[in-house]
Image (cartoon, rainbow, N blue to C red; front, side, top):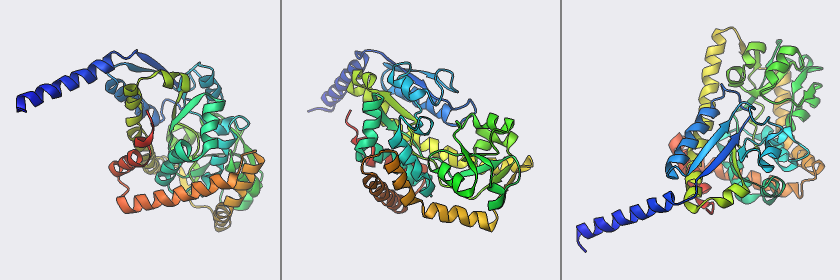
Length: 370
């Protein structure tokens, strides 16, 4: 066969592929989250939406609504189920009675030391290794889980200087999932408040300390009302779903359209978590110059944090039983197995963004049936 013949065959195949994409029915996906306009994940979502549109030949487009402009954090799961949106940022901690399994995963945030490891763990667990997790999305909310990321370490952002265990007693602190248990154990009062509502709660005195990653000083404006930040790690929050798709919409997509959605997820997840890591570092430098104080807890409080986190695995399993999760030990064992797996993967292959993105594709997203 001549080189000219080969070129003609290749060109014909490419045209056929384009024709297949072009012939697909156009689909608009309505996405909703509660993240405020300053949040770094929003522009990364827009980049992702644009890549999907390009790779689908323009047949998949997105209408996005950020900052609770369509649905609040509490309303997103039900709103996606009911078709008000097709996709959204699900956080089970805001609807604990409706999403007990996601809340159970959130209880393990206290044992999270590495956001990269736990990002790999969470996505692989929910997509392939936890039937109850999958069922919670698909059967309760008619939604296909597709992606999330674990956050960098949670810390306390306080209105007044808090250093000791005694200082914590009686304080009203943002507490959800396992963090509510931590608050009660310290003698504090847990308040389940949306992350973006926490600034107003701080400003009004509804809470004394907010709980979130360091970057929330800037992205959620905590630094305007809470100028004392205890930097001892409380583990990074995971669970939830950054991106998903209502099953009715997923089932209407062609294989090419689904491929465009799935193959671009590793880049979205990778950029989201690495941006978070970099922002934490930048925020400490910026807000220290503004006069905000970043400091370690006093030895008694710091020791309390460490011991509580180390002992929390058994407490988390007990909470799973209280939440009526079936066989919570099985989920805990699988989570620990995947934690070991991803720790080794990163140790063996490297922790740079390019490598992490490749691992997400290799270990998770290449295995999704489209």
